Length: 241
Image 1 (cartoon, helix red, strand yellow):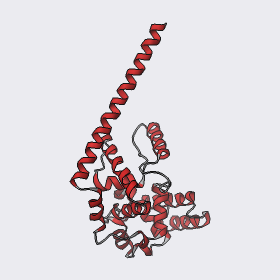
Image 2 (cartoon, one colour; image 1 turned 135 degrees about the vertical axis):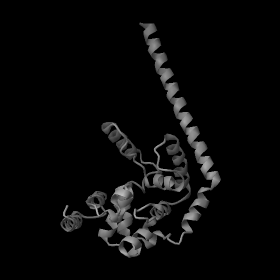
Image 3 (cartoon, one colour; image 1 turned 90 degrees about the vertical axis):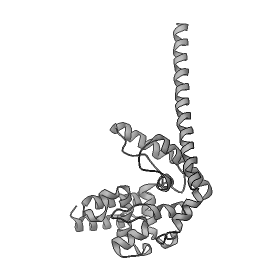
Image 4 (spheres, helix red, strand yellow; image 1 turned 30 degrees about the vertical axis):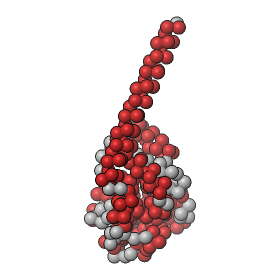
């Protein structure tokens, strides 16, 4: 019996060491990728490039409804976490296991910004680790409002529009500060899947996604239920959904 317990203990230790080795390998590989991309162009230089665009706008020049909608639907604990949201990651992991495929990764706004700054869309573990090193750098050196401002200036809205200024001008012929609640919630939903939700598709999927955004705003306390239900009813009636 003792020898059996020893054998089991040895197997557990071996498995543990293998797991540690694998984790260490990916952390090291991810760090190398992080160093490689940031040596080619530093985070400070990358941000300066983004801010130098003629289409870049300050957070104070963006509709508050739009900013609230983005936080509600993309990262409701944005102002409370340190760049990664353990709760969202756990929930996403459970959803992936239940569906037996990757349907979401629980990425925060900071993670999405890091990915847009340096990395492609492929779901590789090394890239995700490298992304985290960028995330920790951003969270350490920039305020939450800085990060949110950068994020909404680089995300893709479909139909060739990058950043909230281009999307507001292109879709509604308005400045980002002029967006009403209906327009703000619609735009906040598009970057989740731009090719599916872009307005040129004339698809009800866009407005179904908008309703998800509106309900998320209610959950976060950015909208009361009466105002939200009025807007949802208006959308359903006008779009026939």
